[in-house]
Length: 315
Length: 273
Image (cartoon, rainbow over all chains, first blue to last red; front, side, top):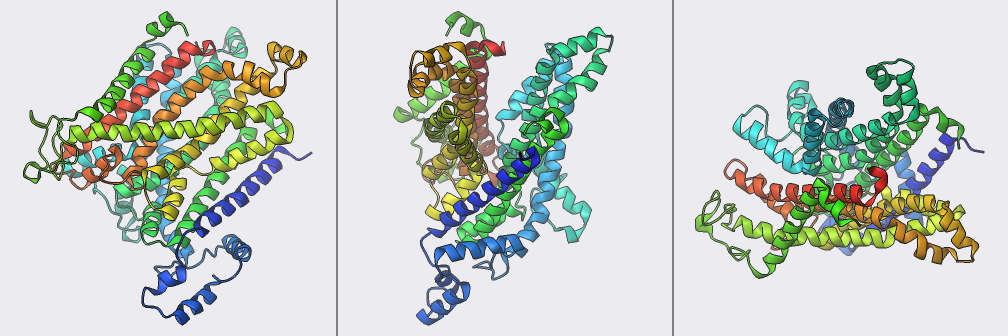
């Protein structure tokens, strides 16, 4: 009998393998020859042939898949067709923008959502609950890139407090770089926070209706104590699930938001690569994002076990 | 469904009215828009809202209200077809998994996990890289993302139904799993699926807007809310109304659908009362 964690990890690895096969096949059926694309229209047949040989393009599909897969594992994602630099280096440079952006937004949305959700649940049915959930209902319906545009209009164009877009690069100074991530992170965080707050509230309310909560109250614990000591911990599982699911939306959101603020992150990279038909870059970025997603969901699954000991014994 | 109970539910009523109005606007756009949607009028470009142009004009002097009206068709079409794809494939898979159990169920769920690893945006990125941009890509990408959502909902609910006495009784009198699924499982899932469809529809509207904003959705000259926002971006200092109204259209539509979904859930599913 495999342990819960091992089983989950094996499933994640399997999913990752199949996903890599899907990504490879998808981008393999694209018409057009990368070697010809790199050399331009006037290349001689010989030159094209040589480059094909060099890039291993004339090898059978299966061999190319396994050498690409082997590359993935060792961090060698191939060379960009247009920039002629390793894809890994391109991605590394861009992750330095996308990752902080995603991390700040995730932290921000959790910091907003949990207190609001807990507050609303503790004031169930009162005016403040209705108000908070009304705002959350609005927040869920607002597309983050539109919210971003409004933020740009108010804080960058009208008030001139922060830059409207662009990124000076971390080498230009931590402060200025962070400043250019403020609006993007808020734009990403608020709609996420709205969803999370709603889930937190309803998860808490469900738990508060359980018998053991009544028992805890009956033995003399205050409402506060019951809320924080008994209810919150048990309400955490659905909240964690949504956090994991939201990560996919966060990644997608990051990619879109980067375009609003002209941030040189993974999103900009992948769109440039599409326009330039630099498929090996698209392949690399998509694989990286999928791998991140699968890893995050694995961590969420494993953290259930940490939060809920009952799951540890079940496999 | 109890009509009286439905009409007493505020979310349901507001949601129904808003959604109905959006649908009417989309239908009306086939026979009437204030101006022809592609009519350029450079002389009156970037005009703020006025009596002549209720929601103002864009950088080509096109009437924004007309573009929003026609754009609603695009949003609705993409969202509804992708819900149909998701439900059409996902629900049977979920029901099949629940009815079969064992390794078939396990394989289907792993397939689900796999599809789940491809958010609509990434699928759209890949599809666009392969086939070039277009509204069809958006439909396929969002539709694919909807499949595991419907499969999970259908499977989870079907599994709990399979242990109910009336289902066990149907099995005892010799009905095949396929017939039990058709006669007893599916009808009892209908309300749950309708609620999920409403939620996915509103997510589809948001996803379509996002995809066409980054150029992966429908292409010009077909107006789309997302691309209108993209075009508004460079004009934000000069003509903020260009960014305001298409965004409001998205928010109102999504809000209406979400309220409708919440209301439907309350009305159709007594467990959530």
